[in-house]
Figure 1 (cartoon, rainbow, N blue to C red):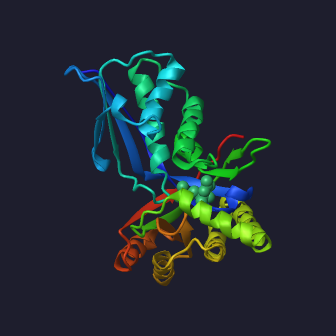
Figure 2: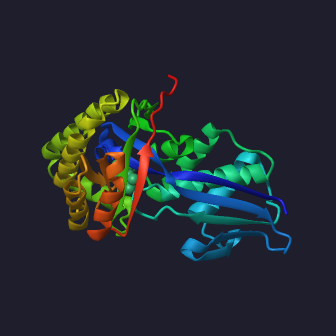
Figure 3: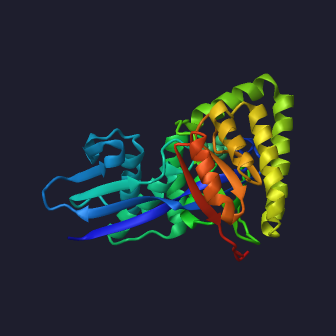
Length: 321
Ligand code: PMV
C-alpha cells in the first residue's frame, strides 16, 4: 500500500518568552526527543479522506471537520498550494509524543509533519522554506498572533535568535552553539493555552506600561547576553541568566506555584539555573545542568511532582551565515 510518513521535533524557549511579543529578542531550540509524526496511506476501503489522531480521540472524515480546525485547514492549504482539486482516498494518521498546550510546540510540529507527508504522498514534496511558511499560516489559526518562532525552530530543527517586527518583518537568525549543553525539561502536567497567558500579560501591560516595559527590557537584555554566552560556549554564564529570566517572568505574573516548585527542586538538585519555558501558568520549566547530573535532576523533578521529565541536549553547531 502506498504510504508516506514524516516527522517534526518539539521545541523549547530558552530565553525571552512574553517579552518577545513586545519586540524583545528570544532564543528557542528544538527538542529532538519529542516528535510529531504524520503518515498518509492510500485508502482502498472507499472512505474519502480519513483523519485519525488517536491521542486526541479523533477519527473523522475531512468534510466533517470545521473549516477552522487546524488539521482540516492544513490539508486544504496543501490542496490549494498544489492545485489539487480532490484528494485520492487516503488516511492521514497523526501521532505525537509532544504534550498539548504545554509550550513544547505540539501544534507547529504536527503542522510541519503534515506539510511534509501529504505533499510527498501526492508526489510533490514541498521545499522546507514553503513548509515553514505554510506552518506559520496554520499557527495563526492556533494562536491568533504567533511570533513565528515555533514553526521556524521546528522546520529547521536548529536553535534560533528571534526578534518580532511586524513592520519590517521578523528577524530570525540561526544561532551558533559554541559548546553543547544539557537541559532537563520538567512538565507541571497543567495545560496552559498560550493565548490566555499572552492576553493576561497584555492586560497587565496596559494597566502599568512603565513597569512592564522595564520587565520586557530586562528579559530582552538577558536574551542578548545569553546569545553571546551560547555562541561563545560560555555555558557557565547561562545558569544565572535563566534564574534572572525566571525572576522577570514571575514579575510578569506568568509563573505559578507548580512551576516555582519545580524550578526550586531543580536548583536544589544541582542545576546551574532554571526557569519556566513558554507561556507559563503551567506547562513546562527547563533546567540547565552538567550532563552527568541530568538523570538526578530529572528524578528530583519527578519527586517534586513533575508529570514527566525529559533530558535533552542543545548540540554544538556552527550554522553558515
Ligand atoms: O507557545 P508557547 O507556550 O511556547 O509560548 C509562546 C511564547 C510566548 O512568548 C508567550 C508567545 C509568543 O507568541 O511568542
